[in-house]
Image (cartoon, rainbow, N blue to C red; front, side, top):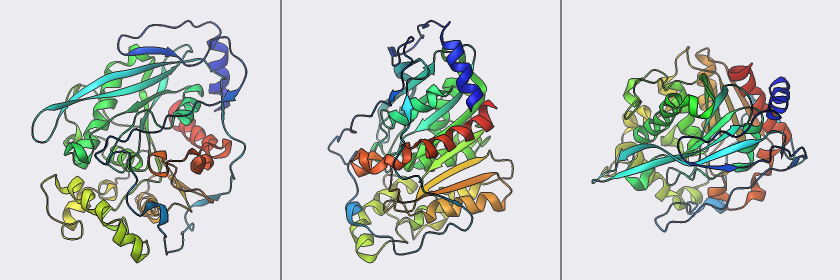
Length: 380
């Protein structure tokens, strides 16, 4: 990790900004700035009025009534300080880069875009595709800007993407396909963004963590490669899953009865995300369909290494969801490391509505482990 950062700092002195072929370019870091500063914060996600951006009913008062299992994981106790800082490496951001035009249920299309942060250093750099969360109801590519910037400054091209969600009439197949389409697009345009196309990882939070896991365990599975740039690979060499779901049929199994009743609408929308927008079948009534939507189903010993995080105070996605995935990966011989972060809640601001509730996720200790994992598997 430190060798990559040092190389970035040295190379940045001699590199000037190159205009990209697509999207607008913003100088996010001054090329002469040496002072470390607070990393930029994301704006609050928009509420479109159709449920996107809104936390599910009951999320604020939910309780998990089963103990958090750390027997195969490592417990981290980072507190909330010190926080990450930015400013060590100049970067450029290419905003609203269109990477796909996808069909919508009922007709019409939607254009999907990404924001790409590129360190202004010499030579091709590893790529990390960031998949934002949003409960399968929204996908705000502007989220988690602080940590995305921190990772970009460590020497990685970071692309935050949009994908189809349940209000679009999408299923998990559509969303996973969109993630893979973004990876193929970036490989096809690697020269435009100084990308090393052989060193690609995927990272996601919450619903994005689920999709990142699905993308990782379906390396080479052509059923999810749909759309343009099919001459490019969509496989990845590393996966970071932060508090993502795995078994969608058990999303509420660890919660108290009141929470289960209050969050029933979440299960109803998730059932449509699995079975399609016209589906009237519950998750419990179609376990075969749920299994097809479960990353555990696709695990293979050749899968890329996984880094998994979950907070033991998360009352949106139970920590047991990532535990099931982690244990299944390890049982298959896949390199998987899982950290349980003490007192950390669900870090997705789209749900908490309060950046203060996610401070554990931007501590130097937690973020440093993420960057170290990326270095070992993409840049080392």
